[in-house]
Amino acid sequence: MINLEGKTAIITGAARGQGAATAVLFAKAGARVFLTDVLVELGEEVAVEIGEAASFRKLDVTSQQNWAELVREVEQIAGKIDILVNNAALADSTPFLDLAAERIDQMTAVNLKGTILGMQAVLPGMIKYGGGSIINISSVNGLRGTGGSAAYDATKWAVRGMSKSVALEFADRGIRVNTVHPGAIDTPMLNPGGGDMSGLAKSFKIPMGRVGESSEVASATLFLASDAASYISGAELAVDGAWTAGIVLGKIADHR
Image 1 (spheres, helix red, strand yellow):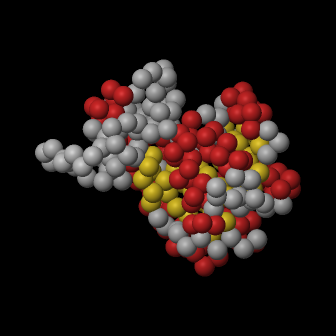
Image 2 (cartoon, one colour):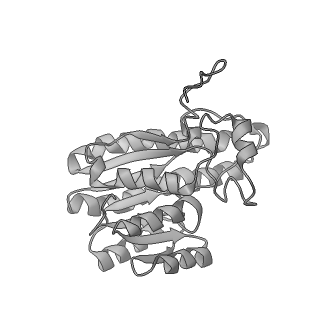
């Protein structure tokens, strides 16, 4: 198993879904994990389930002051921050002509501004202590467009491009910045009712024939966070069952 012993990680949007799964996996790998979210009760429950390696802090990712206070506290407790996972996000499927300016602002504030503020908050400490790993959670919607999802797509494309820029700017400081692009993942965001997702996988024509699990996104994130990915920065890792790999024309031969 990948080892994160001695490392400290901050994970946003960690009260449920991919963020919670990532916190659990990081702790199992030996990291000290600070879970953050605006969903306080759920976040605290996850931290308690993980145990001594985890702590929960309420965080509004759109607030520069909240970020400054969080980073100051984590550095006082743990000494330094080695890993940041910007996972907090809002989804949206509002038809383009119905998008209100307020909703556009809200999506941009959480999905893009929140990611930028988080990076700005941890980078000085990472530079001081010789490096770190930042993983920004984008989406397959940041690799290709999805009709009826313009605001969400715009923010996820922006996260993808911004991450490459920051990866280039801080590569010589020992800081790696990568993006993970989840596809259809069985999380409360995509499946709020917790129902069967097999029909969705078929309608989406996912080549692997199923939706993904939060643990699979967490595993990809763990790899990028670890020293096993020490020469990887500015990269994009799709966790999508080959959904964005291309299209299938006709019937594929059965090789079983």
